[in-house]
Amino acid sequence: MRVYLDNNATTKIDPLVRVKMQPFFEELYGNPNSLHKYGMEVRPALNEALGAMYDALGVPDADDILITSCATESNNSVLKGIFFKYILANPEKNHIVTTSVEHPAILDTLLFLSDYGVDVTYVDVDAEGGISAEAMMAAVTDKTILISMMWANNETGMIFPVEEVSAFAKEKGILFHTDAVQAIGKLKIDLSAVNVDYLTFSAHKFHGPKGIGGLYVKKGKELPNLLHGGEQMGGKRAGTLNVAYIVGMGLAMKQAAGHVDKMNTDVKRLRDKLEDAIKMIADTIVVGPREKRTPNTILISLRGIEGESMLWDLNKAGIAASTGSACASESLEANPVMSAIGEDPELAHTAMRLSLSRFTTEEEIDYTIKIFTAAAERLRSISSTYAYTNEVG
Ligand code: PLP
Image (cartoon, rainbow, N blue to C red):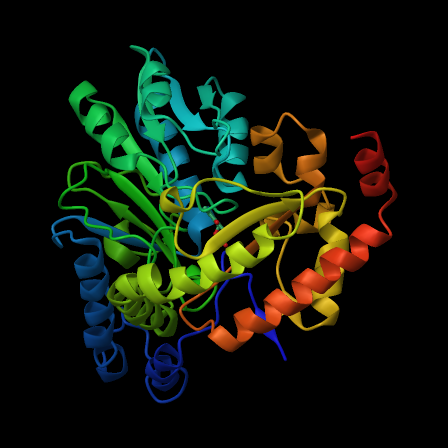
């Protein structure tokens, strides 16, 4: 049996999305910026896809959705765009507030910008892996131009107080960006009710294709173009549009928004079942209270068992999980979010993330529980650190 429990890293393409994309690899290959029939015949599908995204986010099309190649590009675009438009023009307002557990696409970009005079405050997570709205607000100074805060964390699934902090940002006249990559399809997103100026998303996290994403930009909050060249996207990002993938992303987002309830009932039930079973294993820590997490995610630590050893055992049995963000998996580093949360350094090396999707089945979860429990027993029996710490108490 093969079980895919790494849906926070990427997801399988929804079969409906694949079918919808297919004609755009075959007969409908025109460039939408061409004036002939080939160009014109793909435009309705592009407009339909964009319309689906505006609807899914609850925004009018007077606002903008910038199509990008991925969430990494969206995050880079917003941070560098704000640097070019606002900070270069007025270095007095050079302060950005963010969290210490953002994706590297935020953290590394801010590190880069700090060499150019940008001052960044990183708000730490609390013991549950959460971010307090008060701490975010307290970090703001009269030099703050932007608050950038993810909607849900990719490692823990912890949901951050975007509504509260964004309302505060509006009151103070500070721009607000959220990396909503892990929130789309898992939480109800309605930007008509939340003061978000910029929002990042990525199709491959909600059963769309890889290599395509977007940045929502509120009307009046436009950013400078970072990719100069052609006139595509109204001159806001040059480069021929990837029609097939945009069409796929539009349907995938519509489907994701339509499945939020299922995620919070059926998928959550399976997640809770798996979590309950894992918690029966001695010395297990699950990060964050369930009700504060996205419905598909578990970040756990089993004392005395290296995350990688467990992953190998699971992998041999056909189960895919991860020790955390796929972007850091080649370096076999300690889990950064666990490091941020835990006093105990062992936590960071024993972390393991299991993330479900709406395609996960009960049979897959039952199989995972069986394999996981047996693997934990086997690895504990050969773990010298576990035997030692148990002996000394
Ligand atoms: N932001 C978050 C919260 C993510 O989880 C990820 C991917 O793991 C990204 C950004 C980067 O996404 P992409 O692969 O589309 O660049």
